[in-house]
Length: 392
Image (tube, rainbow, N blue to C red):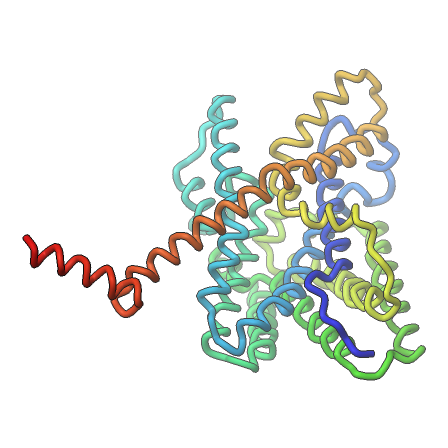
């Protein structure tokens, strides 16, 4: 089929919505108000929602495969990393300040080291792993590390970037698994979770290959994609019946490379199959993703950062005020409230913030370009300055 490239792959938005919903679900399960629920007592469902993070990492690898293609020809790594920084950092820093303010209001003391390591996405303190000011932000450190690797390869590897990137990610992760280093910085730099970014890149390359073919997809391809999607999702669900407590724990996975590698096998591999099949289903069968999932996908970053900080605590207060008291209803109510609240927060805060940051950045960049001596504006300004200087 002749492929018309879409500016936004809606199925990825749907997967982002699913990933953040799973993460929110597992954190709702941490609340004591869910203790008497049927859901919490069912097999290992309590910790299973942490699989959403693995899906997020694979989604990130997929998206970066789509996004970075525009930078490969030019090798403009500066623009790539600048856009990533503008997308990730402002909201994260603002909410970190809010978290610090709430902690100060509650009388909770935070060490200066924790604060500056939050700012610079550095989750290591000597031989220990440390959580940032917003605890769920620990995963962003690995995300930023991934972006830095892409930026380096955009500058040095050119068209072969994807092959080098997959190779480097696999080598780093395997080195971490087999050496299981004691030094915490090495554990971070050689985290087996890096494999999940590689999975996303491979899914992206498969997607590009299949959707760029000139001939329509045959029935065998469509059946294979449907089976891949169903099989991946079935494997994801199967892990509900496996004790995943240890691999769901962020601190344990960050401090034990063997557990991180086990997590990649148990959760990462099924998520890769599911994602690869799901994004191809949209293209091969041309089905429409409901707009609601697209909106939830857009707000997934906001949701990830604020659900434990603001929305779940607020939901608890509202639910207690209602006087209902049923733990299963509490879980459902809090999940719906948190996802809905994230959409509102995205539209009325994150979206506006992103627009302001981008406008401010472009204004600053335009100003700096004008004042460059080699630019026409810079030449004119220089002439004006010289006129006034000579006049005086």
